[in-house]
Image (cartoon, rainbow, N blue to C red):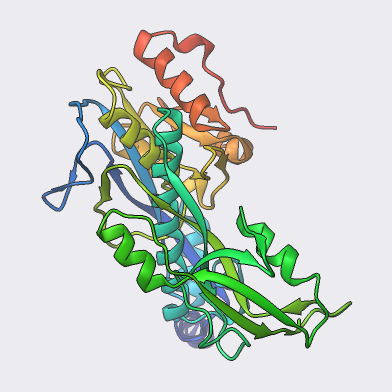
Length: 357
């Protein structure tokens, strides 16, 4: 009896003190994009007529353990047994040994980009023109571009060839061999910011010559300068999204729908409680996200009756759908608007639903 008791104590101590390489995901908060958060409207539109909206268009979130948190065996076992939790390998959430600071910075950037794409997708759907241009998104530390190009610089041309989309930049740079010079024609970020503030077109350009270097690829070495290119926009009126302590790109679809609802008469939901998730790009295409199982549980717990689900997440979501929640499959903002029209009209029998494979 004494030996068994001591063995049990030893096992419990081992379970509490020995870390395991896992992380945990749980349902996070869900916020109505049509309502308020911390006393402020989530969506604020200035310079354009808006319309009252009722019902819910809730974005959903997932809570995850911090990158620097070490789960113990007891916590991992409890998470595996709990219905509303999910335990996954630590590297699934934090690949390449990312620190908490690096992970937070990355998710903040993804969240910011998702807001921009949501605005563009909503306005495109409403046929409201949006000006776009290619910019330097990031500059790699220690690369040839460091100190020569800066985040926010507008890339007008590479070697005299006009740039129309971010992919053009890499295509033009990799025409060179490592060690050759490439010439960027840019509008400096400060000039662009001043032009936007004064509501005028930026006119001052600069030519920046950078010597390429070889990539770190295992195979054939490509010429690179050490930047990533993205897209920036100028909107015809102000759209602010106020939501703190949220990261990642998965709220894009719900932000886009909220903006669309604010800018059009009537109610998209007809008063229904609709939640959802999904990334969105400038063209309105909806992409998959992580933690779908946690998000539908969180939405259902808050009272959602319909959940807009990215098509690529449907099979996983449908395996264990909470009672009373209808999973609606969407692949674009257009699909979501069509589904909302059916919900509004009470024609829910024909909704495209998620099914388990």
